[in-house]
Amino acid sequence: MAIVVDPDWWKTLFDEVYLITDARSVCDDVLTCREADVICELLPLDFGHKILDLCGGHGRHTLELYKRGFTNCTLLDYSQKLIDVAETKANENDYSVNFIQCDARSTDLPGGSFDHVIIMGNSLGYIQAPGADSKIIKEAYRILRSGGRLLVDVTDGSVVKNSFNPNSWQVKWIVPGKISLSCVSQQFDYFCLLSENLESYLIGFITALKGWLNRVCENI
Ligand SMILES: C[S@@+](CC[C@H](N)C(=O)[O-])C[C@H]1O[C@@H](n2cnc3c(N)ncnc32)[C@H](O)[C@@H]1O
Image (cartoon, rainbow, N blue to C red; front, side, top):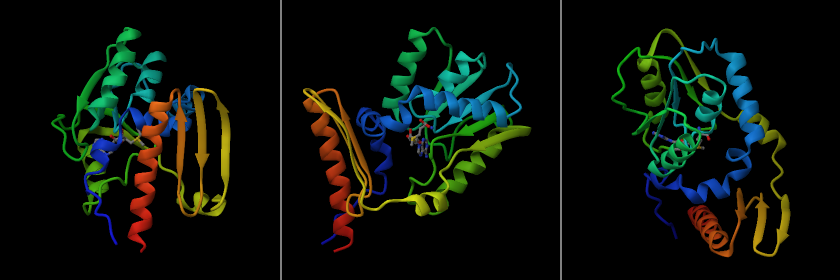
């Protein structure tokens, strides 16, 4: 039995549930600060530079860079829900950031218009269509000015393979009304649930279970 997965699954994946299931990596301010430190170390950033946070999600890097004085930032993402989260935070802080909702493979941004493009937090590899990632990279190249820099942050697959424990379980904490459960196993691949209330816990759980069922059924 095979469950057919919509090839455009990534278009609806990144929403408020993702901000719960992936909170450990994308809602950790300390981690984001450290990543922003690395951006600042690797790129020859100038306060006047135009920076494009391509596939920037809910804007954690854009907002941190803005806070550090790099105020010419544009955040582009496909997910309007994540852009809304970023925009709300920007407004709360009085940050003037440009937000663009579109597919990173083909933007309407003028060629040569950015000093730096950053693609952070493993944002490639979601699209099944052949050549999708190289289209995103080519688009970044087109948007960059001559001599501009592209920074791509992706996990080192060989490190993950070597350090992966296929059967580890981890329960972080459980208190009434707040449940946090992380699981890594051969069967489940990966999911992490973190909830403030039962409803969002259930939404996270069902999302994780659906993903797991799809993967298991593909192998039957
Ligand atoms: C894992 S999240 C990382 C988000 C952000 N860079 C971070 O580090 O928090 C991947 C993001 O890439 C975006 N994305 C993936 N493919 C995209 C595409 N073709 N066009 C625009 N956004 C895309 C998703 O919407 C999602 O917000």
